[in-house]
Image (cartoon, rainbow, N blue to C red; front, side, top):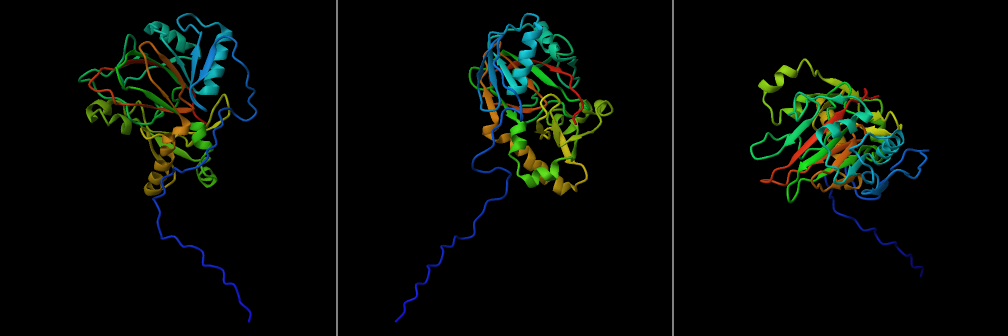
Length: 313
């Protein structure tokens, strides 16, 4: 009698899934430098990495003095390679902070924000009763302008005893890890950016209406190319990007929500704990940032200068 072995039935799992949210488990591509980039040692300061692809502390560079051309070149290379640089205990005056930032271009003014000692110094005074501005939201600065800021230099004047950190996200890594089908959809697409959604969270129409003509909606690429490194960067954010051009509202909202969530991936981030007098200098073209609002009722006072940028392409 012949006995036929019947293979066992494969196990069957019950139907179960979570909504597709744009984030996933598993290995990620964490590439800090562009393809073909020649990495060289820094000769004029010490650099200590704080993250895998983003964030480094610079030691031994005096920001209070005029930068020699060689030092400026090395700092710029470090900015391109690490995207945000930190300088502990710099304790710059507002004038020194502005002079340092001017090594990268003309300074930007922002009439929508409070000024410090001059109109190109923005002062974020988070004392009791102060107007809240741009905390606990991932964003890149002023993408509602035709020429968003190249970068910014932020100094903490007063630091709460606990909390008040800032996080930055590497938007090149965010783009690198998108599924190919998503990249195919967004490469070449443009999106509309507008100042009203971000600022209407804390200002009323009477404050914002006078600026509507000065800051009309603008279109930028959903994926911009960094003008110095050639990296492709995801360039949409929850504060200012309102819709993707040519899509119906539901499709645009769904895709924008997916893209904006990419900044939330910890592997793309660096988090910085401030001390008084610390300075951060970031590449606004390549990053988004998030100021953590977890320090109430303590005050937090910062001053920022922003550097004029180019039109994204």
